Image (tube, rainbow, N blue to C red; front, side):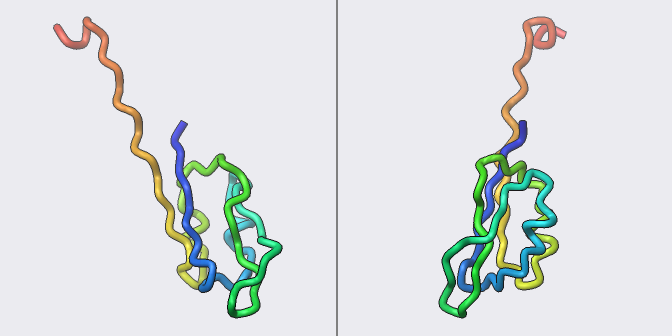
Length: 83
């Protein structure tokens, strides 16, 4: 399974919740805390992000950066090596 994570600019986020709705994994939620601008902000609430980037694409403030872990190297069998 492909794994990813997000970094959210807490002071940039205005809590519009568009990213929460766009996340197919339901990885994001709205914080109970308030940032310096007076907004509740989005945060990663589950460790099941796949790095699909839907949240970053829809964010009107560009407050989200998505990181995707590289795919694991494919294991080769002896038959593939000798060809």
